[in-house]
Length: 431
Image (cartoon, rainbow, N blue to C red; front, side):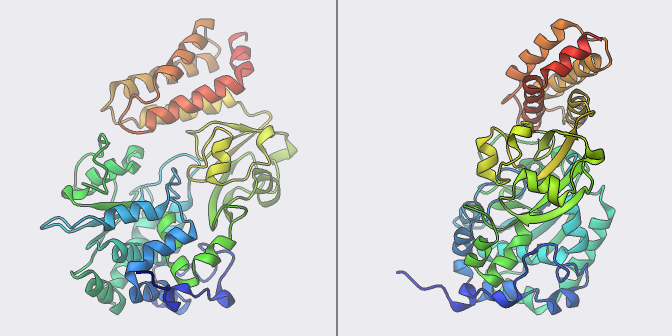
């Protein structure tokens, strides 16, 4: 039987809907819950409480996608968890994944430090939608400001009537937990996050089963990135149609782009999903540092295919960037200007992956270290022509050989730099 969406979830509140959503002045309430509520916080959750069975539909209509890297449609993941029965003695779990640790990515620490309540409110709406009774804020312990802010914010929700209403709708008490991660990069992979939340070492595990089927203690578990949850209360408050108007073209909403490298104004920029790379760098980023010519950008963090000057007009959304053979990922953009060595940067990033391999998969642990050693040898002027062939073979053999995407990321950036900037490798060999 079809029902019209209740006006409480259809409303757009266009009069007070900010174009800067996650980073608006009103959102930056810190851990003070009264300040967040006074700025309009809580309205999204109140509207969700009026029709909890329609939450997932609203997110579908809004076009919200996972903003931690893959861009998977949020409503599909939420629906999968909502459709499963709770596990006896455990119920269901929800994890807000704030283990951000990749070079060039710094959006989640901003949200958790400056605007924790919009993240918590989004997570509570998620708990309401999937009937989760355990809500975990999973935070990188290397970001003490974020850990402190989230801990204070969670304490502020304790005993609040809205939390009690969520528990009543779910049918069981809803517990908020702040759990610092292991401090390891690999701990951000979803199955590793599950292991870490259970108190174990964050070893990624083979899938299936996916966490939605059997996550924390075997219970259905919903895992999304911090930025994804932060958008949810605004969508429920202002409506799906409003959210779609914020993006460009077919893209919906806004996106936090972490801009760094050889630009005049590095930092966090909240812009429409689908803004062009050229606009991000030359307008919002103030152009190239020292007026150097643009050379390339490590897109979505250092684990994707490099984009070059030929790609400056690409729309920064999941589908458009994928059409260029790369990925939007977390929205991190590490800009490289002429005079900065792509070979050197690639060596640095592969070394990061090698150092952060959990060692569970020998192809990853040994392979990434082998790539790192060869890159350092070439960059240091001691490379051999045979090293290029070895790197090409490793770039071909390593992808898909691990339980998580770490080795794939190292192989992808290696293959991309070899293909696009091979002249830098050749020049280093001929020094």
